[in-house]
Length: 227
Ligand code: ADE
Image (cartoon, rainbow, N blue to C red; front, side, top):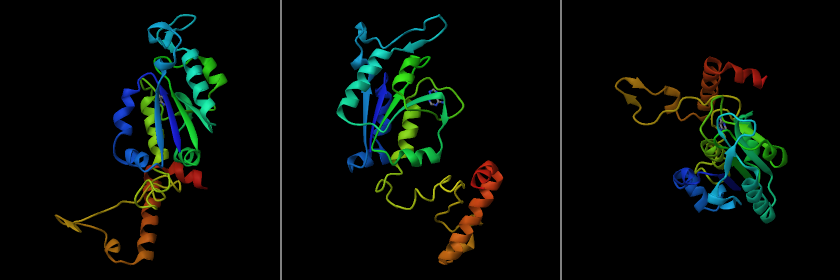
């Protein structure tokens, strides 16, 4: 999978993609994340990428030309499955969307800034608009990082234990069950006996029941979605 991220603050993303699982996925050739500085594509002097909104009002708007130039360059090089725009008025990002997008070959994520992008960018280029939650960030970079992380960790071979992404919270519209590691007894707080029993079927059953109970208590709305 290749993800091209278009931003006017590329440095913000460097450390995120340069560490841990995301770095390993890239080193192993399983994912490629390429960050593009919008300012490299602007025809305007002083590397300007934004301007005042027509009609007035506070806040700057990202101009269409640098975005168009960047997207035209990328699209001349490969076919993109989706051009995502991250924005608080997009559809809510869920594990289901992550699963779906993780099967794609080439994605663009366009980050807004300030007041967002000129509406004509959305009309002409964007194929899907995604929000990572009902709050407003100062730019789309964190949203692009969140989405990329959620997709890349699903790619086969990225996580060392192949099954561990499948048992994440939300994968069956259930939250994950509690987990424990050593010591088996911490100051009298004991690990549930069944987990030490070595009895795989009973452990599976226990985990399912715990997942169901946790979901019932914390996110009953997910159980409605299962029905
Ligand atoms: N940009 C600013 N806020 C955002 C949000 N909540 N989700 C996605 N992109 C954003």
